[in-house]
Length: 111
Length: 117
Image (spheres, chains in turn cyan, brown):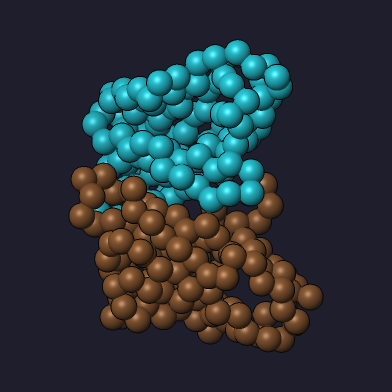
């Protein structure tokens, strides 16, 4: 079955440092979504990428979808304490009704 | 964005009892809802896909007789954990895609924390 791998599992950074999490799928995806889950909370949708090579920005967050549509990344510039949480990618295969979630990357930010 | 509610938010029950969890889409219709289970510091594990008007589709390894799903209307899906045991203690989250939105966004409920004693 489809596998979605996410690395790293944990990342500890000093406030102001950059952060990147990577997502890799064993199969070509029709789209990939990114979610953020704060400690004790539920996942909240951040963005969806559909096109090969697509890059989208949300303030300090930059999302990329690979040319082969099998990998994606989320980069946060100059992290803040409000960025703490677990970031999940979710990939959907073409014609599949469901998305497969990666294991998530948990970010902690030291003030 | 769309809102999905879940009830109850927390439940503590004795081993052997059944627990029903409700998932409602408040401002949109959801022909499909997903049920996930999440253990502490772990990812979301899809348990089943709930389909309005038809049987749910269960993921491999999930017992359909233990986790009963009913999608009675376009805004309500229920998950019943039957004869709960301590190993069923977990965080259960539902999500629903808004089919009318341009993006295939999944809107998650706030989750239900189940503790089986």
